[in-house]
Length: 314
Length: 265
Ligand SMILES: Nc1ncnc2c1ncn2[C@@H]1O[C@H](COP(=O)(O)OP(=O)(O)OP(=O)(O)O)[C@@H](O)[C@H]1O
Ligand SMILES: [Mg+2]
Image 1 (cartoon, rainbow over the protein chains, first blue to last red):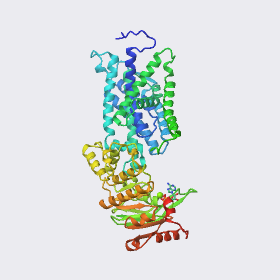
Image 2: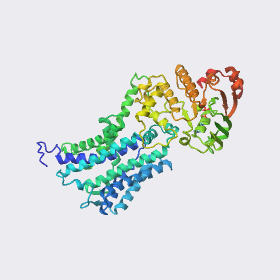
Image 3: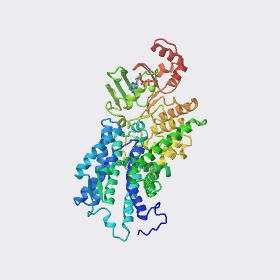
Image 4: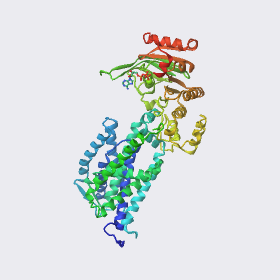
């Protein structure tokens, strides 16, 4: 290990940094999938994830310290995230608060909730068993074990979710996001599907928070800042490298996008010539997402002003 | 059978824009009857169909379908009883989903949607057979997104979707208005065939007097939220477009209008 001798030490990634980027990319892949569910499938711009990610981390950390089984702790974190999603969905569906605002309210409230859950701004996990513990000491280096275990969890999530979205219930959820009026005319309880979808989205984000806490050995209330933007960035990168109609592929795109995004960040940070610091990450990500959101609009404008565009079926 | 008793609908109650759109509609439509509905813009035709489908709830009166009081039911709950095709071909289907996914959505209308696969191979085969009946060659395009179809094709598929779940009532709100004349004729013929084969109780809103008399068994004219003409049988058979136009003009205060302006309107 650590023997990756590289002539351009200043610009290249070490092996550890590479696997570290993949690991964090896989953790945030769950956020990306959650964001894909809310933004893309339900057409519900949900910022709750900025709160449900650290909530998942906090719940998991506190339960681990209390000696709870790591898998049970992770599941509880997912459930806590789902409940946060239900709060947002209720504010929107039941009380007609605009989705963005509803999610911001939940997100802000969660900041306080997370402090309450942990009792302090951050909690360290040093001696506690995590879902990773059984896999350490099998002869595989730790920095490879972590992405492997997280990768298997992500793969299971992708498989289950792809199957879920292909079910009658999942199809109705997709219809809810695409054409709610039609869905209702086909007997779909669109409100119910918004509840379920936003809960699922934030449940996955809570699980991501739990995995973050376990792979990094701490939970911190500030880790949530910018989660939504990172998730969106991953979704957008994924859609760019894997422009797929098939849902299973789109989910894989989210995972790939999340990993690629982290690798790109890693490269940018390790290239001294660019002069970026870790603290610039949010700025860079926000710019990236903004550009990605603006580009299609510019493209559409360009093609609209093009002379020949016979009855462009929307 | 649909029984409507004295329903009223008011939009924007208590605001300066208050609109009493339905002012007491009483109707009984026996099972299997095909009713055409005409009336000028703003007469309340869409509101009436919407109140049958559950989009707008009547603030007064009663609606029952096959003996069940559905007055307070919302749209999804009524969907098991009522199928619809909208005026806008984009409105009645999901452009971003495939043809077979749209069909699967419609086939589950009025049922609990569980975690079973929406598109098993049996169901796919069934959909292929059904869509082949349209004679549009769509049976080879089940995986295409609905948005790729032309307006007429989408309306044809929407009509087919209306029959997949076995509901007995079909509501058509100017479902051919967005189509060119030839396509509109095709969709109308298909409508007639589907209504007959499935013995559907049908309400079809149209702006064409000709269509209103040529299709179906009974014609209603709405005006300012009321039924002002209700003809069937011999009386209807004896009616011609000029008669209808005259009646129509009388309702509008004697202003002469032509069939054309109605079509455009
Ligand atoms: N959602 C709504 N809010 C407020 N007013 C409405 C609403 N829907 C319909 N109206 C009003 O109710 C009246 C009846 O409208 P409706 O759409 O039922 O007419 P219509 O007979 O279908 O007309 P058209 O031939 O133009 O489709 C109109 O005055 C309309 O402006
Ligand atoms: Mg109308």
